[in-house]
Length: 94
Image 1 (cartoon, rainbow, N blue to C red):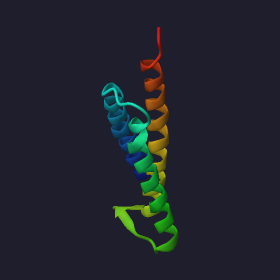
Image 2: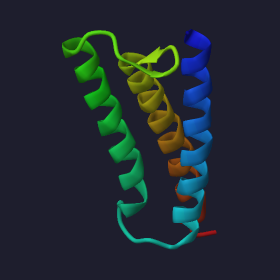
Image 3: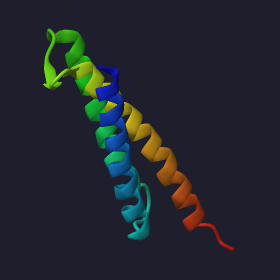
Image 4: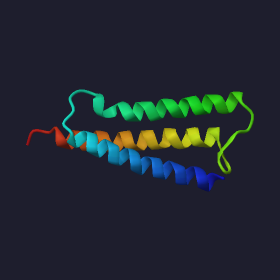
């Protein structure tokens, strides 16, 4: 069960890092680069909330709502860190 959560988290992280890389290269102004990560983080919190309220619901075979929420939170946090580093190197004046 934990292996499925790790796999989903890694796949979501790779997808979000690619999206962050593309949004960083699109030369968006302000914090609009970080909105997809905020959305995935919010989805993860909602899934964790529903996991405490609703009985056991399996989403991808053996992964419950809580596991999917944890995977979303993990992927949003790691992708946000990687994208902020890419944005910092892009915007430096050298």
